[in-house]
Amino acid sequence: MSRPLSEDFTEKKTRASAWFKDLQNTLITSFERLETDAGELYGDAPAGQFTRTDWKRGDDGNDQGGGTMGLLKGRVFEKAGIHFSEVHGEFSDEFRGQIPGAKDDPRFWACGVSLIAHPLNPHAPAAHMNTRMIVTTQQWFGGGGDLNPMHPAYRTAEHEDTIAFHNAFREMCNRHGTDYYERFSKWCEEYFWLPHRKEPRGVGGIFFDRHNTGDWAADFAFTQDTGRCFLDIYPTIVARRMNQPWTDEDRDRQLFQRGRYAEYNLLYDRGTVFGLKTGGNVDSILSSLPPLATWP
Image (cartoon, rainbow, N blue to C red; front, side, top):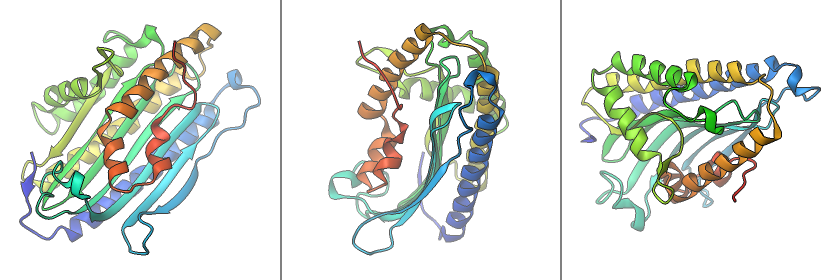
């Protein structure tokens, strides 16, 4: 839940912003290491590196924050985006009623890191991760990480990659709250659901939003550990799969499932809506879409 503000959050905004920026840098380093470590399966394709592009919010000359878009098109990752943003301003009339604490005072501040990854190898799962802090007349954290295998053989609760991913987040959550994993994994399952397909986007993970227990330091620590947990487990899974040979049939299955991923992000994803409604960088927001996808 979110709670009314009882203090000036200037110092805490600064701390959170610095940490999210550091997380972006650390994640980028980890992904570029995987690009370097790719084996003979990728032939003479060069290791990819992230291109970082700074952007500013708004076009009226007022300081409304901005961010750094990190985009990779490499050999291991056909497309990956690791983005940092820190923006502020006022919600539009049509949007403010949907945000806690913004109905009577539309001013806001939001900062965080968002990550999407679409490996080339169909055996390596796509993934999403986000950590954020938002301040209106209330304050809260949100985020999570979820695994999205594109090959049907990997899209089960019993697959070793699924088990490893969930075990990592279960262990992390248990350090912060005895009910955190149960609550947030269920939330992830419900949130990343395609109603029109009656199927999940992936194999889950955790998702939390409007998280404020009344202990800012504890909530921030949990949000930080969410990013660290993803940083530990996801590159490990990719490293295990990225040099596994694949067939044209495997690739066809991957592209089909990517279509489902695109449908979800365009129709239901709350982060996509929030970014577009608050004047975020469109290229950064829509970088979550896979580079190639197919529909029957």
